[in-house]
Length: 169
Image 1 (cartoon, rainbow, N blue to C red):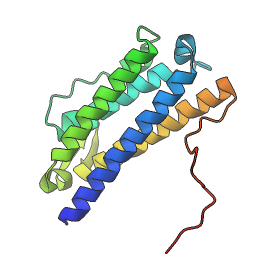
Image 2 (tube, rainbow, N blue to C red):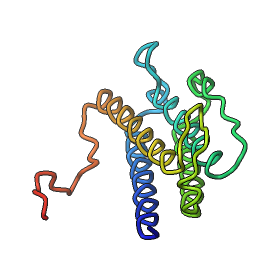
Image 3 (cartoon, rainbow, N blue to C red):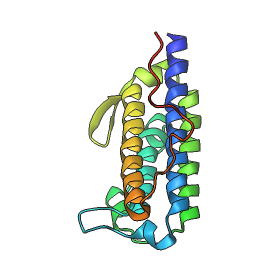
Image 4 (tube, one colour):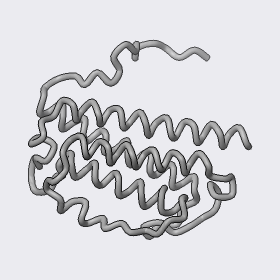
């Protein structure tokens, strides 16, 4: 079980950092104004999505697994319409992921299997990590899609990788 825990934690943190690199690539391609543009009233800007990701990761990992007070104001994440530069948004995301990664690296097996209530959901520590990983990936996809729409270009996430290669059993 120890090896499973180590691999689960390692793979989760790897995916978090992979997502951060993809967001960084998108931010480099977008202008400061484009980061805060909303395509319509029902959609969020890239800036809102990054702030939202920081709030979600803070609530689920830093507060819950890290045993810190939950101070999240979720609705505020979507009301913000500027005030952060691309570099400030990226730094906020990177710092949030770094703190969350540190907490996850130190999580005990009991912490990963213990059930708790987060944002109204009853989740184990493993469920929390899975939620954060899929939630981050979901919004990275939205950010990438928005960037592709604005820039009409391949973002190169898989550059140098042969995605047509068959599995080896």
